[in-house]
Amino acid sequence: MTADWREIAVPAASTSVTAAVVAQGPVIPPQQQLLLYSPDQWEDFVQEWAHYCLKKQYSQVQRFTGSGDRGIDIAGFTDDKKLQGVWDNYQCKHYDNALRPTNVWVEIGKMIWYSYQKEYTPPRRYYFVAPKGAGTSLTALLADAAKLREELIANWEKYVQKAITKSQEIPLDAPLLAYVNAFDFSIFDAKTSMQLVADHRTSPAHAARFGGGLKPRPEAAKPPAAIATEESRYVTHLLGAYADHLKKPVGSPDDLATTTRLKDHFHRQREAFYHAEALRLFARDSVPVGVFESLQEDIYDGVVDVHDAGHPDRYVRVCAVTKAARDLQITANALISCVKPKDRDGICHQLANEDRLNWTQS
Image (cartoon, rainbow, N blue to C red; front, top):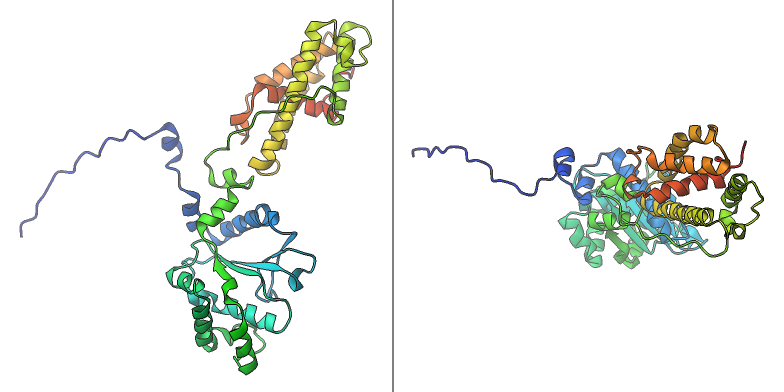
């Protein structure tokens, strides 16, 4: 047969290439990223998932480590009885393959044996958690409790008997077999990568781990009419700055009623403070711990020299510092895409609330 030689065709034109794709490559869905994780990356992910997601569901979540874990990895407790009460077990392991029945027989065997020994009550639910989830064969068994029991019994001698403990073999004798036959095998299930990602998406670590940007930021609340306790310190600093500017006492915001410029300035500063507080709350739910505090540090470092410089009066100092905050070039912080000018002013007042900036110091 004669080969049919053809010229290499010109690749089809693409209209979907963006600057972000060129700079960073195509976005890989989180569930696909899980498949590429090393054991250490998987451990980091499980730590985040357990901390941010499982703790929402239970009164307490604990991880059992070491050789004496008795078949328990992560336990979620619903009451103070812990292992003697209502609890769920999450067996989180890294495998290069989707979980097979041979990967789980000994884990199920441990749960059977130690609950048979009354070291704990059987969990309400038992989930296998692995990067590639459960394979076809295991998924089918987990959906059929009777078949799962049957297969465990058939595989006990080969995969379980010598693997539960290093100190003894655990043969499936008559009393233990009776316990196996009475055990509720419907508790066993496996988490899919889609379920894990859906859980993790509710955590503040999600964007930092998988990318994709931050969720939309809600509008900030308007300041209440009365000065709240949590803003009293920076307000005191502001009133002192106004007094220095006016060269007369300013004991409360009401004393600014006849000075429109300062009254409006005070109102804007309160709005800015509440914007920054809203950003703090948004950061708590959207990015890892420390990101917002790092933004505060960036702003402090950028304005402290302006703060400490000489100024005609203390109100002028306030205006110079907040202008410096708005002019700062901050590009690395994970929140910067959703930071507004008012947030920067407000962070200055948060710092004043902590006495790190003090408008009334000499």
